[in-house]
Length: 427
Image (cartoon, rainbow, N blue to C red):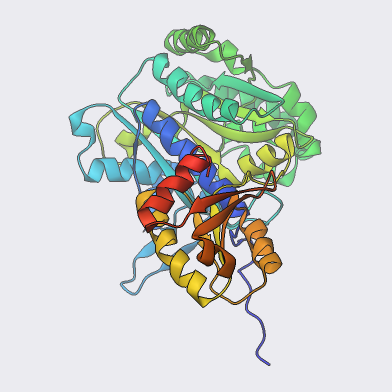
C-alpha cells in the first residue's frame, strides 16, 4: 500500500466548514476596503530576490532567515513573497500608477516564511493589508489605522488595544541609534545571542526583543520621544489629534519599532488579549523612503498588514465556534420521477436566485436525506415523493422550526418564486 502524502509542514488545508469563515472575512474585507476608497491589487507569488533585500532590509529576520529563495532555470534568484508592501510598490512603479497621483490599494493573499510552525503561525500564511501612497500628513496614517480598526470592531473582538509610536526619520533617527548603542554596549555580555548579533547592525530591533535576558535592559532604554526632530514631533502630535477626532482609543508605546527597515515616523500595532497574552492582530506604519529606494519618486506612503489566520483564531476565541446559521434549501427526491421533477426546480433556483440549493441524487430514505440536509446546513427542505406527485403539492419543511407547509408543483419558475415568497426570502 502506497504511503499517504500529507500537506507540507507549516501549511494547512482550508476545508468546510472552516472555509466559510474565511469567505465571510474576505467578503467583509472587500466591502470595507471599497467603503474607504481602496482598490485591490494582486501581485505574483514570487519576485526577484533583490526586491526584498532592497525593500525590506538586509538585516531583517525575513531576509536573513525566513525567505524561501530559489534559483530558476535562467539562473535568476527568485523568492516566494514573504511580505506584500515591496511587491505592491514594485507593481505601482512598473505600471506607472504613482504618476497618476496618490493611490489607495489593498491586497488579500498568501505570504511565505520559513520559520518554526506554531499555532496561528504557518510557513504559508495569509495577509490582508492596505497601502496609501502620496500623502505626507498624519491624516493618512489615521485613515489607515481607522480601516483596520473598523474591521476588528465589526467582529466585536474583546480586549483590543491600539499602541502607537514614532521612530523618527533620517534626520533624527541616527541620534537615537547612537543613544541605544551607548545604552546597550556596556551590557552586551549580559544580552541574548540574538541581541548581541543585532546591536551593531540594527540596535532598534533590540527594543522588540522577547528574550528574558534582554527585557530589563530594554525597559531602561531611552525613549524615542526625547530624540524626535521638530517635524517628526509635529507629525506624531497630528496623528494623536486625528485619532482623537475619529474616537479611536490608543496608548503610546515607545518600544514598538516593527521588524522591517523601511518604516519611518508612525508605527503601530493593534492587539487583543483574548488568547491570554497580548496577540498582535495587525501592525504597520509609514514608509516614506521605500518608494524612492526602489527606483521611484520621492513619495510618502503608509500601510498595515493583518494576519488572517491569527485574526480568525482571535475571532473564534472571542465569540466561540458556534455553528454557522442555516441557509438555503435541500431538494429531497424520493424516487426517480421525483428527481426528474425537482431537478429543473433546483436549476431555476441556482440560475435566478442567490439561494444555496442542495440536491442528493441517490436513492435514500427520507431520514437519510434529512441528515444530509443537516450536514449541509440547509434552512429548508423541499420534499417530493410519490404522494406529493399524486397530489401535485410538494412539502416545504422548516428544518429549524420542524413545521411543514405545502406548495403547488407548477412550473420550475413558479415553484422557485413560491419558495422565495413562502420563506420570506430567508432561504
